[in-house]
Image (cartoon, rainbow, N blue to C red):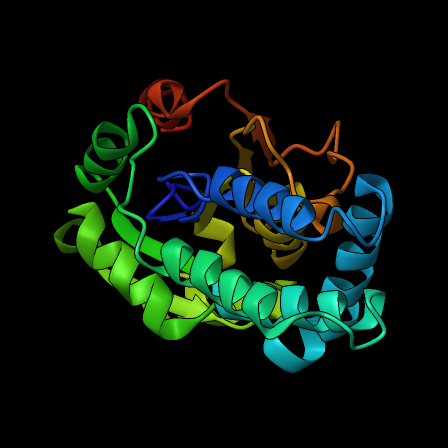
Amino acid sequence: MPGKLTTIAFDADDTLWHNERFFKLTQERFVSLLADYADPAVLDAHLLEVEGRNLGRYGYGIKGFLLSMIESAIELTEARIPSSVLQEILAIGHDMLEHPIDLLPHAREAVEAAKADHMVLLITKGDLLDQERKLAQSGLGDLFDGVEIVSEKMSQTYSSIFSFHGDGPARSMMVGNSLKSDVRPAIEAGAWGVHVPFGLTWALDHAEPPLGHPRFCEVPDLGSLPDLLADLR
C-alpha cells in the first residue's frame, strides 16, 4: 500500500546504548573537583550555561563536554584553577572516551526485528570518531543499511536522509529517546516519530511531546517496537 513503512531509523545514544549516565557521573566528579570554589548548584548551572553557548563551536559529544568543563573551571575560579585539577578534568574526559559500550535492553532484538521487513538506518549526532567507536564496539554495526552521523538533527536532516536512503519521509520512521532531536523534527519532516523514554535527559534536550499528532507514538522500551511495527503494516 502507498503508506507502507519501508525505512526505520534508530538514534544511538540512550536509545540503543547508555550514554547520558556517563555524562552525569562525570559531571559529579567535576563538581567534586571544584567543591572548594563554588556550591554544587552554581557549578552545575555554570557548566550548563557554558555547554549551551559552546554547542555552535564544538557540537555535541564528549570532546565538547570536556572543553566546556575546562572553560567553566577557568571562569569560575577566575583563572586560579591549579594545573593539577585541569589534568584531572582531562583524565575524566579521557575515561569517558574509553568507556565500554553497554547496550540497552532489547536493542539488538529491536533492530533485527525492524530489519526483517525494512531498510534500517542509524542516525546519530555527535563527534564523528567517538560515534564510530561506539558503533563498532556495540556489535550492531552490521545490522544497519546506512549510518549517518550528523552535527544537528533538524527536519531538513531527516527529509534529506530518508529521501537519499529510502522512499522519503512519508514512508519512514525515526525511533529515539529525544523528543527534541529524534521525534519532533522527524514528524515535521513528514515521518513517524517514536519516542522511547530514557530515565535521564540532558537539560538542553528537553521538549514537549507532540501529543495528538497522528504520526507520534511512544513505547515503554525497545521491546515493544516489533509489535508497533506489526500494527502499522
